[in-house]
Amino acid sequence: MPLRSHSYDVIVVGAGNAALCAALSARERGASVLVLERAPVSERGGNSVYTDGKMRVVYEGVDDIVALSSDLSPEEIERSDFGHYTEADFFDDMARITQNRTDPDLCEILVRQSRATLRWMKANGVRFHPNYGRQAYRVGGRFKFWGGAPIVVSGGGQGLVDALFKSAEKQGIEVVYKAWAQELVHSDRGVSGVIAKIDGETQTIRTGAVILACGGFEANTEWRSRYLGRGWDLAKVRGTKYNTGDGLAMALRIGAQPYGHWSGCHATGWERYASDFGDLIQTPNFQRHSYTFAIMVNADGRRFLDEGADFRSYTYAKYGHIVLEQPGQYAWQIYDAKVAHLLLDEYRTRQVTKVTANTLEELADKMEDVNKPQFLKTVRDFNAAVRTDVPFDPNIKDGRSASGLEVPRSNWANTIDQPPFEAYAITCGITFTFGGVRINTDGQVIDTNHEVIPGLFAAGEMVGGIFYFNYPGASGLTSGAVFGRLAGASAGDFAKQRRAA
Image (tube, rainbow, N blue to C red; front, side, top):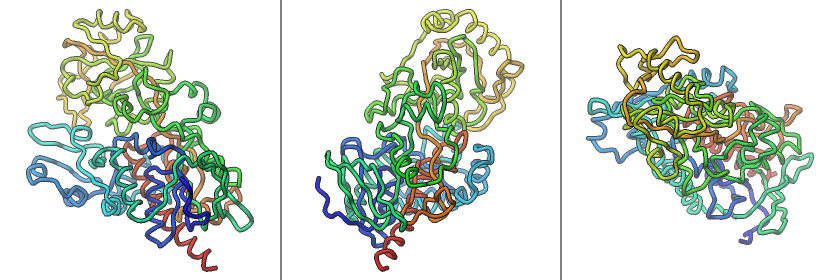
């Protein structure tokens, strides 16, 4: 696809949630915008298209939910307890989950702009609805939402990307596919262009500002080993194969300041025999996030983490790390009939490594690669430790614990004693990396001399300093949208000022 021009006000590198929000925001400022998407049109959308579309957002109550989900019926509202999730709640979660390392200025932007950004996305054609089933269980005829993430995009990640592309097309934003950005045109005056290979031909495209929103380095095996450490070359990649750190490399080559948790990432429990990279058809079926109602054992037949430490929204992004550290880089999730009805839909697909049995001995035999005597002992010890006098409630941290064990269990502990028993094999799936470049509160990239690089902006996974060690579930898409919108507005204004000058 030939370029309409070789000069634009703003060039956005990438075409996921953050990139498209940046493009739309820059266009609102009157800028001419070019989006360079490395993937072909059939694989467009970066990591965003592989998500389930959950977004963490500040809301005060049902009115804020209705403002985003205007097609909610009175009956749905009546049987739903949405609760609230205040700015203070969001700040507390970010501080607690990142061990107080999140950049305070960037965190403030993320939290305080979350609600306005989702409403802006809705105005740009993105449809939302309450996340029944994944963030609320029906108890006593009512859905009670938990975990601070009640909202999901209609159609998931694919619906999000399609809506943003549709809006971009309406706004006259040019998108070029199979466009591999490789270098930034840079001088003492800052960044003024991009060198990209488009359909095999290297071209230089001039611009007033560049927004890098082309993801982290999670799909780069060598970089994972270099920055995340030993064994990370063996992790499965949950999303796109095109997030190989090219945007980071381009920025670092011209002096951008590395920032954030470069040895950290979002990684979760994933189908053991999933494809090496994301698959747009199968990937949604590979996640295994009902572990709060299971026990997890490794090849030695031992539990190795607290499955009920918190709601899965606050633990799933770090538990993949722990699975990767186990012998053979795998584990098994064990459920019995009492909780089988609580398992998420992906457990009931064909893309699953599952064994079932009517006795625990038979289950251990079918798992094959687990130490059977130790596994049976683990289950016996766990069952004996469960606080059966405490009521089980999946909608709250119920305090139903199993204490006195080598690895205690904090909540949602149920004895494993009612057949049929089910076991699911998992490994580690990496979602995105936490390390990035440093930006200021206008989305401008900062260099290693702590000065702005004129004309260079960043958003999405490219931004470092927001997440450390872990992340509150559903905050990734929100962060991409918030900082994409911010970078787009700033880049649009900068490009207009440069053009006038």
